[in-house]
Length: 284
Image (cartoon, rainbow, N blue to C red):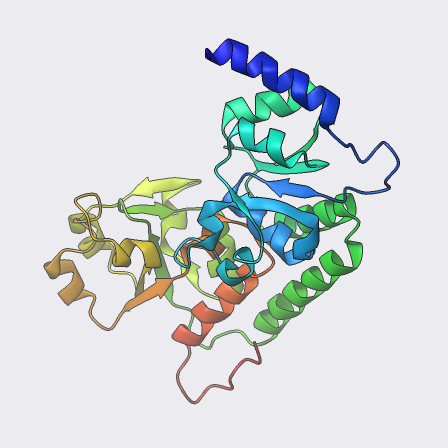
């Protein structure tokens, strides 16, 4: 069957079978996520019985913060056909969700929430409360936000005696400057993001520039170290590793790439690396 014919068939089937929340329910009873970041938020807010599926990536420990919870629900691959099978009341999607799936949802009138990237803790707070309200899970959302804000408040109340400069790199040697979630997390930890001097967004660093910059701590994403490749050969080469020996940390990439209430815990992890053993231990 050709793609245009298949698409029309999907439209007809969905138009007759979908069950929308507006047809009686005050909030969606069956919710589907087709983005890794929205997977995490959905798993945080709803019980498995109300989740039709999350993406397959959410079951991967290296990709997902809530991989154990993801095994309790079905998974999808972001395909339009899967939306037909599941007939959700609401679909959560990210800004980079596959266009065909988003086009289908819009065409048949299935409710969809598209969440842009969260680049600050204020973004995380607003998105968590927004999604929680849409799902009828205000209590859960408010609990997550309170935990995040308590963690951030505790970090702010116990600043490190000597802030360290940190440069965080992804697998291709790209660092994160101002206006990024990485910068927000580093700032909450009480450290200085060395790449803020490069401006907003992201900047590339090769081995020579890294050796010249000499940050107090060099942060690698866990996936970068776990999967050596030609792409990350500059930032993992032996010379750089020797020069920065004892000044390297591994950070959980998901908590920096997906804005979640648990991203505050990533700031706690950074703080613990920065502080001497004699400093009082944070409670979280």
